[in-house]
Length: 392
Image (cartoon, rainbow, N blue to C red; front, side):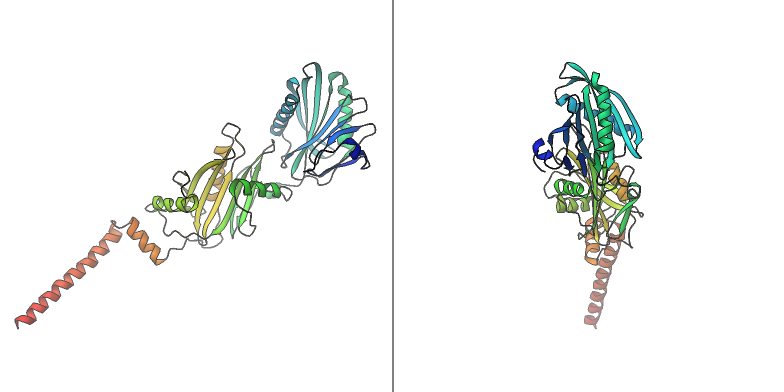
Protein backbone atom coordinates (compact mmCIF):
# COMPACT_ATOMS: atom_id res chain seq x y z
CA UNK A 1 0.00 0.00 0.00
CA UNK A 2 1.15 3.50 -0.70
CA UNK A 3 1.96 5.98 2.00
CA UNK A 4 -0.46 8.79 2.75
CA UNK A 5 -0.22 11.67 0.28
CA UNK A 6 -0.69 15.33 1.13
CA UNK A 7 -3.29 17.54 -0.47
CA UNK A 8 -0.70 19.39 -2.56
CA UNK A 9 0.19 16.22 -4.42
CA UNK A 10 -3.48 15.29 -4.74
CA UNK A 11 -4.35 18.62 -6.36
CA UNK A 12 -1.46 18.18 -8.77
CA UNK A 13 -3.33 15.18 -10.20
CA UNK A 14 -6.13 17.34 -11.68
CA UNK A 15 -8.23 16.96 -8.53
CA UNK A 16 -8.71 13.26 -9.35
CA UNK A 17 -7.82 10.67 -6.74
CA UNK A 18 -7.78 6.93 -7.37
CA UNK A 19 -8.59 4.67 -4.42
CA UNK A 20 -6.96 1.56 -5.83
CA UNK A 21 -8.04 -0.95 -3.19
CA UNK A 22 -11.71 -0.41 -3.99
CA UNK A 23 -11.37 0.61 -7.64
CA UNK A 24 -13.06 3.99 -7.06
CA UNK A 25 -12.01 7.34 -8.54
CA UNK A 26 -12.87 10.49 -6.54
CA UNK A 27 -13.02 13.93 -8.13
CA UNK A 28 -13.06 16.90 -5.76
CA UNK A 29 -16.14 19.13 -5.71
CA UNK A 30 -15.41 22.82 -5.98
CA UNK A 31 -14.06 24.24 -2.73
CA UNK A 32 -13.22 20.93 -1.14
CA UNK A 33 -9.77 19.90 0.06
CA UNK A 34 -8.23 16.55 0.95
CA UNK A 35 -6.08 16.55 4.11
CA UNK A 36 -5.11 12.91 3.48
CA UNK A 37 -5.82 9.97 1.23
CA UNK A 38 -4.43 6.54 0.43
CA UNK A 39 -5.16 3.53 -1.73
CA UNK A 40 -7.78 2.43 0.77
CA UNK A 41 -9.49 5.60 2.09
CA UNK A 42 -9.93 9.35 1.80
CA UNK A 43 -10.80 12.30 4.07
CA UNK A 44 -12.16 15.52 2.60
CA UNK A 45 -13.29 18.83 4.14
CA UNK A 46 -15.52 21.53 2.65
CA UNK A 47 -14.34 25.12 2.25
CA UNK A 48 -16.05 26.25 5.48
CA UNK A 49 -14.66 23.31 7.47
CA UNK A 50 -18.19 22.45 8.51
CA UNK A 51 -18.49 18.98 6.94
CA UNK A 52 -16.01 16.11 6.78
CA UNK A 53 -16.38 13.33 4.22
CA UNK A 54 -14.77 9.95 4.73
CA UNK A 55 -14.59 7.25 2.04
CA UNK A 56 -13.47 3.77 3.09
CA UNK A 57 -14.36 0.13 2.60
CA UNK A 58 -14.64 -3.26 4.20
CA UNK A 59 -13.45 -6.44 2.51
CA UNK A 60 -15.89 -8.76 0.69
CA UNK A 61 -19.03 -8.09 -1.27
CA UNK A 62 -21.73 -8.40 1.40
CA UNK A 63 -25.31 -7.58 0.34
CA UNK A 64 -26.87 -4.54 2.04
CA UNK A 65 -29.46 -5.94 4.46
CA UNK A 66 -30.87 -4.96 7.84
CA UNK A 67 -28.41 -7.32 9.53
CA UNK A 68 -25.52 -5.81 7.56
CA UNK A 69 -26.74 -2.31 8.41
CA UNK A 70 -26.53 -3.01 12.15
CA UNK A 71 -22.98 -4.27 11.80
CA UNK A 72 -21.91 -1.29 9.68
CA UNK A 73 -23.50 1.09 12.18
CA UNK A 74 -21.48 -0.63 14.92
CA UNK A 75 -18.26 -0.18 12.96
CA UNK A 76 -19.07 3.51 12.39
CA UNK A 77 -19.75 3.97 16.11
CA UNK A 78 -16.42 2.37 16.96
CA UNK A 79 -14.60 4.73 14.59
CA UNK A 80 -16.24 7.73 16.28
CA UNK A 81 -15.24 6.55 19.74
CA UNK A 82 -11.68 5.89 18.62
CA UNK A 83 -11.55 9.48 17.30
CA UNK A 84 -12.33 10.81 20.78
CA UNK A 85 -16.09 11.37 20.49
CA UNK A 86 -18.60 10.08 23.02
CA UNK A 87 -22.32 9.49 23.63
CA UNK A 88 -22.46 7.66 20.30
CA UNK A 89 -25.94 6.35 19.48
CA UNK A 90 -27.50 4.73 16.44
CA UNK A 91 -30.46 6.79 15.26
CA UNK A 92 -31.68 4.84 12.23
CA UNK A 93 -30.81 2.37 9.48
CA UNK A 94 -32.58 1.82 6.18
CA UNK A 95 -32.06 -0.53 3.25
CA UNK A 96 -32.94 1.31 0.07
CA UNK A 97 -31.94 1.69 -3.58
CA UNK A 98 -30.20 4.76 -4.95
CA UNK A 99 -29.77 5.08 -8.72
CA UNK A 100 -30.45 1.37 -9.03
CA UNK A 101 -27.78 0.39 -6.47
CA UNK A 102 -28.86 -1.41 -3.24
CA UNK A 103 -27.67 0.82 -0.42
CA UNK A 104 -27.78 1.02 3.35
CA UNK A 105 -28.38 4.49 4.77
CA UNK A 106 -27.62 4.97 8.42
CA UNK A 107 -27.46 7.81 10.93
CA UNK A 108 -25.58 8.12 14.21
CA UNK A 109 -25.59 10.92 16.75
CA UNK A 110 -22.63 11.75 19.01
CA UNK A 111 -20.86 14.45 20.96
CA UNK A 112 -18.01 15.95 18.98
CA UNK A 113 -14.94 15.70 21.26
CA UNK A 114 -17.41 15.31 24.12
CA UNK A 115 -18.83 18.81 23.53
CA UNK A 116 -21.05 19.73 20.56
CA UNK A 117 -23.91 17.57 19.36
CA UNK A 118 -23.02 16.07 15.99
CA UNK A 119 -24.30 13.68 13.35
CA UNK A 120 -22.79 11.06 11.07
CA UNK A 121 -24.72 10.15 7.93
CA UNK A 122 -23.47 7.16 5.95
CA UNK A 123 -24.21 5.25 2.77
CA UNK A 124 -22.85 1.74 2.26
CA UNK A 125 -22.98 -0.11 -1.05
CA UNK A 126 -21.17 -2.86 -2.92
CA UNK A 127 -18.52 -2.67 -5.59
CA UNK A 128 -16.75 -5.74 -6.96
CA UNK A 129 -15.52 -7.75 -3.97
CA UNK A 130 -15.80 -4.84 -1.51
CA UNK A 131 -18.34 -2.75 0.42
CA UNK A 132 -17.76 1.00 0.16
CA UNK A 133 -18.78 3.27 3.07
CA UNK A 134 -19.18 7.02 2.46
CA UNK A 135 -19.93 9.13 5.53
CA UNK A 136 -20.58 12.81 6.14
CA UNK A 137 -19.97 14.25 9.61
CA UNK A 138 -20.98 17.64 10.98
CA UNK A 139 -22.32 19.29 14.10
CA UNK A 140 -26.09 18.98 14.29
CA UNK A 141 -26.71 22.59 13.27
CA UNK A 142 -24.99 21.80 9.93
CA UNK A 143 -26.91 18.60 9.30
CA UNK A 144 -28.39 20.00 6.05
CA UNK A 145 -24.86 20.62 4.77
CA UNK A 146 -23.88 17.05 5.61
CA UNK A 147 -26.90 15.71 3.71
CA UNK A 148 -26.08 17.85 0.68
CA UNK A 149 -22.41 16.85 0.78
CA UNK A 150 -23.28 13.15 0.90
CA UNK A 151 -25.61 13.54 -2.09
CA UNK A 152 -22.91 15.41 -4.01
CA UNK A 153 -20.09 12.98 -3.31
CA UNK A 154 -22.00 9.76 -3.84
CA UNK A 155 -24.09 11.02 -6.73
CA UNK A 156 -21.52 13.00 -8.73
CA UNK A 157 -17.94 12.65 -7.51
CA UNK A 158 -17.28 8.94 -6.97
CA UNK A 159 -16.77 6.87 -10.11
CA UNK A 160 -17.03 3.12 -9.59
CA UNK A 161 -14.51 1.29 -11.74
CA UNK A 162 -15.89 -2.22 -11.12
CA UNK A 163 -19.56 -2.47 -10.10
CA UNK A 164 -20.85 -5.16 -7.77
CA UNK A 165 -21.03 -8.63 -9.30
CA UNK A 166 -23.90 -11.10 -9.30
CA UNK A 167 -23.10 -13.74 -6.65
CA UNK A 168 -26.22 -15.87 -7.11
CA UNK A 169 -24.48 -18.41 -9.35
CA UNK A 170 -21.59 -18.82 -6.93
CA UNK A 171 -23.63 -20.52 -4.20
CA UNK A 172 -24.39 -23.79 -5.96
CA UNK A 173 -21.36 -26.06 -5.76
CA UNK A 174 -17.60 -26.38 -5.72
CA UNK A 175 -15.45 -29.15 -7.16
CA UNK A 176 -11.98 -30.68 -7.16
CA UNK A 177 -10.40 -33.67 -8.89
CA UNK A 178 -13.69 -34.68 -10.48
CA UNK A 179 -15.69 -34.56 -7.22
CA UNK A 180 -18.36 -31.95 -6.50
CA UNK A 181 -20.19 -30.76 -3.41
CA UNK A 182 -23.04 -28.39 -2.65
CA UNK A 183 -21.96 -25.45 -0.51
CA UNK A 184 -23.78 -24.96 2.82
CA UNK A 185 -26.05 -21.91 3.28
CA UNK A 186 -24.14 -18.65 3.59
CA UNK A 187 -21.15 -19.95 1.64
CA UNK A 188 -20.17 -19.13 -1.93
CA UNK A 189 -17.26 -19.32 -4.30
CA UNK A 190 -14.99 -16.29 -4.16
CA UNK A 191 -15.25 -13.55 -6.78
CA UNK A 192 -12.22 -12.92 -8.95
CA UNK A 193 -11.73 -9.65 -7.04
CA UNK A 194 -11.70 -11.60 -3.76
CA UNK A 195 -9.41 -14.44 -4.78
CA UNK A 196 -6.30 -12.57 -3.61
CA UNK A 197 -7.70 -12.40 -0.07
CA UNK A 198 -8.72 -16.07 -0.14
CA UNK A 199 -5.21 -17.04 -1.25
CA UNK A 200 -3.73 -14.96 1.56
CA UNK A 201 -5.98 -16.63 4.15
CA UNK A 202 -5.32 -20.15 2.85
CA UNK A 203 -1.58 -19.50 2.83
CA UNK A 204 -1.41 -17.83 6.26
CA UNK A 205 -3.95 -19.99 8.10
CA UNK A 206 -3.52 -23.38 6.42
CA UNK A 207 -0.08 -23.13 4.82
CA UNK A 208 -1.79 -24.45 1.68
CA UNK A 209 -1.50 -23.09 -1.86
CA UNK A 210 -4.59 -23.03 -4.03
CA UNK A 211 -4.17 -25.36 -7.02
CA UNK A 212 -7.29 -24.84 -9.21
CA UNK A 213 -6.82 -28.29 -10.77
CA UNK A 214 -7.09 -30.05 -7.41
CA UNK A 215 -8.67 -27.57 -5.00
CA UNK A 216 -11.67 -25.37 -4.50
CA UNK A 217 -12.05 -22.56 -2.01
CA UNK A 218 -15.24 -20.97 -0.70
CA UNK A 219 -15.92 -18.08 1.65
CA UNK A 220 -18.55 -17.04 4.15
CA UNK A 221 -18.22 -13.23 4.16
CA UNK A 222 -19.38 -11.13 7.10
CA UNK A 223 -20.33 -7.42 7.11
CA UNK A 224 -17.46 -6.51 9.44
CA UNK A 225 -14.92 -7.30 6.70
CA UNK A 226 -13.95 -10.71 8.07
CA UNK A 227 -14.74 -14.08 6.51
CA UNK A 228 -14.66 -17.78 7.25
CA UNK A 229 -12.76 -19.86 4.69
CA UNK A 230 -13.37 -23.38 3.42
CA UNK A 231 -10.93 -25.25 1.19
CA UNK A 232 -10.84 -28.76 -0.22
CA UNK A 233 -8.13 -30.50 -2.25
CA UNK A 234 -8.24 -33.93 -3.82
CA UNK A 235 -5.71 -36.54 -4.89
CA UNK A 236 -3.59 -36.50 -1.73
CA UNK A 237 -1.52 -39.72 -2.15
CA UNK A 238 -2.11 -41.41 1.20
CA UNK A 239 -3.44 -44.99 1.06
CA UNK A 240 -4.37 -46.48 4.42
CA UNK A 241 -6.21 -49.66 3.55
CA UNK A 242 -9.52 -50.98 4.84
CA UNK A 243 -11.51 -48.52 6.95
CA UNK A 244 -14.52 -49.73 8.91
CA UNK A 245 -15.82 -49.95 12.46
CA UNK A 246 -13.04 -52.38 13.34
CA UNK A 247 -10.11 -50.36 12.02
CA UNK A 248 -11.26 -46.72 12.40
CA UNK A 249 -9.51 -46.05 15.71
CA UNK A 250 -6.24 -47.59 14.56
CA UNK A 251 -6.35 -45.84 11.20
CA UNK A 252 -7.14 -42.57 12.96
CA UNK A 253 -3.86 -42.91 14.86
CA UNK A 254 -2.05 -43.44 11.53
CA UNK A 255 -3.72 -40.41 9.96
CA UNK A 256 -2.91 -38.13 12.92
CA UNK A 257 0.71 -39.27 12.97
CA UNK A 258 1.00 -38.64 9.23
CA UNK A 259 -0.49 -35.15 9.16
CA UNK A 260 0.15 -33.74 12.64
CA UNK A 261 3.16 -35.61 14.00
CA UNK A 262 3.39 -34.93 17.73
CA UNK A 263 1.08 -31.87 17.67
CA UNK A 264 -1.67 -32.02 20.33
CA UNK A 265 -4.58 -33.02 18.10
CA UNK A 266 -7.42 -35.00 19.69
CA UNK A 267 -8.52 -38.32 18.16
CA UNK A 268 -10.68 -37.86 15.10
CA UNK A 269 -14.45 -38.13 14.94
CA UNK A 270 -16.06 -40.45 12.45
CA UNK A 271 -18.23 -38.55 9.95
CA UNK A 272 -19.97 -39.67 6.73
CA UNK A 273 -18.36 -38.64 3.44
CA UNK A 274 -20.12 -38.53 0.10
CA UNK A 275 -23.32 -39.99 -1.26
CA UNK A 276 -22.33 -43.48 -0.05
CA UNK A 277 -21.69 -42.22 3.52
CA UNK A 278 -18.23 -43.80 3.73
CA UNK A 279 -16.23 -43.21 6.90
CA UNK A 280 -14.08 -40.09 7.05
CA UNK A 281 -11.94 -38.53 9.78
CA UNK A 282 -12.79 -35.14 11.34
CA UNK A 283 -10.31 -33.16 13.46
CA UNK A 284 -10.41 -30.01 15.58
CA UNK A 285 -6.97 -28.44 15.17
CA UNK A 286 -5.16 -25.99 17.46
CA UNK A 287 -6.24 -22.37 17.03
CA UNK A 288 -4.31 -20.21 14.57
CA UNK A 289 -4.27 -16.42 15.11
CA UNK A 290 -7.43 -16.61 17.22
CA UNK A 291 -9.24 -18.63 14.54
CA UNK A 292 -10.74 -22.08 14.91
CA UNK A 293 -9.58 -24.64 12.36
CA UNK A 294 -11.19 -27.97 11.46
CA UNK A 295 -9.99 -30.61 9.01
CA UNK A 296 -11.59 -33.63 7.35
CA UNK A 297 -9.80 -36.54 5.64
CA UNK A 298 -12.02 -38.49 3.22
CA UNK A 299 -10.69 -41.65 1.52
CA UNK A 300 -11.39 -42.14 -2.19
CA UNK A 301 -9.83 -43.82 -5.21
CA UNK A 302 -7.01 -41.28 -5.64
CA UNK A 303 -5.95 -41.31 -2.00
CA UNK A 304 -7.61 -38.71 0.22
CA UNK A 305 -9.71 -35.58 -0.16
CA UNK A 306 -8.42 -33.07 2.42
CA UNK A 307 -10.88 -30.39 3.53
CA UNK A 308 -10.45 -27.50 5.96
CA UNK A 309 -12.55 -24.73 7.38
CA UNK A 310 -11.22 -21.67 9.22
CA UNK A 311 -13.43 -19.38 11.32
CA UNK A 312 -13.35 -15.62 11.44
CA UNK A 313 -11.31 -14.20 14.39
CA UNK A 314 -13.13 -15.04 17.60
CA UNK A 315 -12.42 -11.79 19.50
CA UNK A 316 -12.49 -13.57 22.81
CA UNK A 317 -15.76 -15.41 22.09
CA UNK A 318 -16.85 -18.43 20.15
CA UNK A 319 -16.99 -16.58 16.82
CA UNK A 320 -18.82 -18.79 14.36
CA UNK A 321 -17.00 -21.98 15.39
CA UNK A 322 -20.11 -24.14 15.76
CA UNK A 323 -21.51 -22.98 12.44
CA UNK A 324 -18.34 -23.58 10.49
CA UNK A 325 -17.82 -26.99 12.10
CA UNK A 326 -21.27 -27.95 10.85
CA UNK A 327 -20.55 -26.38 7.46
CA UNK A 328 -17.48 -28.57 6.91
CA UNK A 329 -19.32 -31.73 7.96
CA UNK A 330 -22.17 -30.82 5.60
CA UNK A 331 -19.77 -30.15 2.74
CA UNK A 332 -18.00 -33.51 3.23
CA UNK A 333 -21.29 -35.40 3.54
CA UNK A 334 -22.50 -33.78 0.30
CA UNK A 335 -19.58 -34.90 -1.89
CA UNK A 336 -20.64 -36.45 -5.18
CA UNK A 337 -17.80 -38.73 -6.23
CA UNK A 338 -16.62 -38.25 -9.79
CA UNK A 339 -16.14 -42.00 -10.37
CA UNK A 340 -16.33 -45.29 -8.48
CA UNK A 341 -14.10 -43.55 -5.93
CA UNK A 342 -13.57 -46.62 -3.74
CA UNK A 343 -10.41 -46.37 -1.67
CA UNK A 344 -8.06 -49.08 -3.02
CA UNK A 345 -7.07 -51.89 -0.64
CA UNK A 346 -4.30 -54.17 -1.94
CA UNK A 347 -3.71 -57.71 -0.78
CA UNK A 348 -0.91 -56.75 1.61
CA UNK A 349 -3.00 -54.01 3.23
CA UNK A 350 -6.00 -56.30 3.50
CA UNK A 351 -3.99 -59.06 5.16
CA UNK A 352 -2.56 -56.46 7.54
CA UNK A 353 -6.12 -55.31 8.29
CA UNK A 354 -7.24 -58.88 9.03
CA UNK A 355 -4.31 -59.63 11.28
CA UNK A 356 -4.38 -56.24 13.06
CA UNK A 357 -8.11 -55.76 13.58
CA UNK A 358 -9.93 -59.05 12.91
CA UNK A 359 -7.54 -61.79 14.05
CA UNK A 360 -9.96 -63.12 16.68
CA UNK A 361 -13.05 -62.91 14.50
CA UNK A 362 -14.56 -66.16 13.18
CA UNK A 363 -14.14 -64.73 9.69
CA UNK A 364 -10.36 -64.89 10.22
CA UNK A 365 -9.81 -67.23 13.15
CA UNK A 366 -12.04 -69.99 11.78
CA UNK A 367 -10.14 -70.50 8.51
CA UNK A 368 -6.83 -70.36 10.38
CA UNK A 369 -7.97 -73.06 12.81
CA UNK A 370 -9.27 -75.14 9.91
CA UNK A 371 -5.98 -74.70 8.07
CA UNK A 372 -3.96 -75.69 11.14
CA UNK A 373 -6.29 -78.63 11.68
CA UNK A 374 -5.63 -79.82 8.15
CA UNK A 375 -1.89 -79.60 8.77
CA UNK A 376 -2.18 -81.57 12.04
CA UNK A 377 -4.52 -84.13 10.49
CA UNK A 378 -2.21 -84.52 7.51
CA UNK A 379 0.76 -85.00 9.82
CA UNK A 380 -1.05 -87.70 11.80
CA UNK A 381 -2.11 -89.48 8.63
CA UNK A 382 1.42 -89.41 7.28
CA UNK A 383 2.73 -90.75 10.59
CA UNK A 384 0.30 -93.65 10.55
CA UNK A 385 1.15 -94.59 6.98
CA UNK A 386 4.84 -94.55 7.81
CA UNK A 387 4.39 -96.83 10.79
CA UNK A 388 2.33 -99.26 8.75
CA UNK A 389 5.06 -99.47 6.12
CA UNK A 390 7.73 -100.13 8.73
CA UNK A 391 5.73 -102.99 10.31
CA UNK A 392 5.51 -104.82 6.97
